[in-house]
Image (cartoon, each protein chain N blue to C red):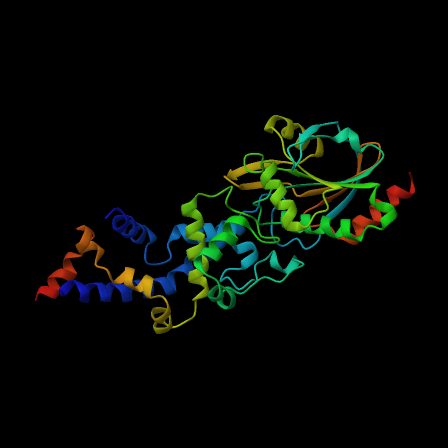
Length: 143
Length: 217
């Protein structure tokens, strides 16, 4: 029972999409090298002796755990963020990388491969948890 | 099942929202962040080359802690040419370029020059950069630790060193520091002779400057 509650909590906290917190973290800590859209073309990238990955090509080949580890422990010239950031911030970064890797893809592709997120987004959290109800929409449905 | 229909609609709304808004938000952030560069701190984008200056600044002796948690005396490097730079491990600006440039200089030294040149990276973020964090940083860059130390210490000691080198350090957030990007070359008598400000210095120029000091020994 406890694990069910925990998993539900993680789902609720994970959120459905990008949020301002993720954008702010990305701009602060990632964008200078990885670029606005995660294509490896940030302002610092041009001066780097190594090539930077395009998230659209590399992220799918990695598990969420691997992405998290790279963010936490660093790799080559990439800093290790674990000493400086909270675990929730590292999760936000990992999600942001994941979102950017799907940028430009159509929704059907997105839904096909990301069943977990879609499942999460499909759960009527407002009903389950009893908040965030949208009265005007509810009224329309009842008619 | 009214709620499923509602949720589906909302999900579509969310997906639409997610595809359009982040780009706009990022542009706003870009304007805010890049639009207000600090004139003194050189963590600014757009500078393609480091500014080189010939200087004569005597460096006071200091004791810091290296990446193996051992005390490190600056005085122990007398008679050696020292390449010293300021950086912090979670920097995503010019520090990675500076450390990479130092690594290149270290690699390109001739065998007979190796023992006469020593490299130092001094942190600007003692809050995060403990010896273990610095050791991992050094490993990621493949630094040869027989001639390169990564130094940290208590903030009061570091403040004195930063001041001696003319490095301004401003803490913005945990693991996010604005600081003067300085790489320097110090001669065998402990006097700073060359200073490179801004983005990473050209390894070839640093090598030339090191060799000019080695030749005068």
